[in-house]
Image (cartoon, rainbow, N blue to C red; front, side, top):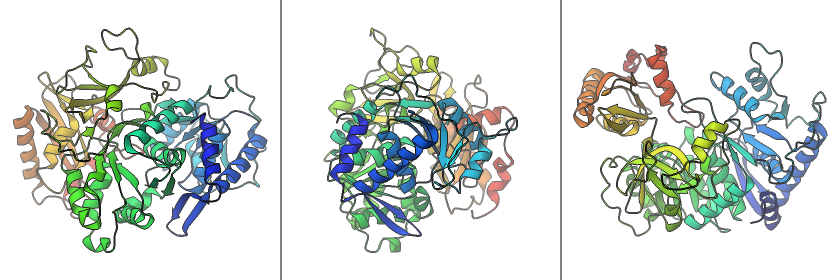
Length: 565
């Protein structure tokens, strides 16, 4: 591929009169978009933006719902050389401060939205000491309401093609305020090429994407990469899959998709919430790439998924784990496990499913001692470090943190070229085991214990507990060997009849396994733990609140005994 705008333009022309993207709409059926449909609306938007804001280039925050309007604005921004910042539409609460931070941090020219969302966005972007939003808020579906009061923004000094980010991808903010990763066109093209070579994504690819369009997995993997490799994609709302997981599998069946995937919780939801009668006539035989990523993958989840849906044609070799993050644009490791029998996991890795490494991905991954910055031998744990042409170019307005994260140097190397992921892992037998976050650890007398590993052990003691919705942390970071555990119930499950007995069993198991004394164990109703916009549990935020005595009433243990939820 050449530049990103040229690559997008070429793909639109290749499928000028044939469907390139199909948007599924729950209430209005589906809409097929050919190359000329997307090109025409993108050109119209660019003309509109020039009349409203001046030549630019600009930085636009897209606070848009999934579907045609977001796709049009995204492609217009990329074709026009603007910087696009995708965000979740506002939901109120703590998201207001996050959204204000993002808009101010990236220096947005405007927030682009719909007429329905505009009032909520204006409220989100207006703080107590401001009479007006921190940034103009403009509805794209109100062309007659031109924002005449917005002064044209003068061209920027870095207006040359390729000198500014194509996308600023804000991280989920699981530990603090979101950080904006600067992703340029060349990184998107390089990472797309890595996915294409690792997974054989090409012009024959048929992709079903339900993942959020404002996060890297849905934006890059589900929208841009199928387009850039010449393939076809079906776009559906994440809410439809959350409401009814079977709708995801039926979209794959109906459109004979070859590629689709999601986080571990989506595969777990399919197992828990899809009934046998929901699958009558379901055909998954075309699904050759069923990728699972975005968080540590519980051991046993993918084999169980393969077995459950094998009778509906799912090829067993299609289901595999992968790993990546916004700082590396999207993808770093993982490949189909075709014909490979997985060996026994190394010590400390039995709770997770691994990602298969190819020669290409293995060359750009190291497991490093996070304190000494020395490479760990295979089979021993450490922090995952990455390198390569997909690596982003630092965070917005955070030069010191950017240098520490994006330009780390292994001891003995002259040049710092490594990305410190903050994730813990082990490499063994060409398999990468991602065991947790370096900050999501508990210390037991010099031994580091991954929070997810502790959570999975605890949840295994009662089938009503959800290992993917839990938070384990140290109540006092200086007190070795002590911990706190909050764990939610699975969807549709009642609290255990004797919650105190279950909590006592958890305490004994954790003490016996790691010598950690859990001084507080709480079983909570579904949805009570604080999450990021992508659905990840905010362990650090929960821990900080606990340590500061700011535990919400919803965390009351009594709430867990209320019956079916």
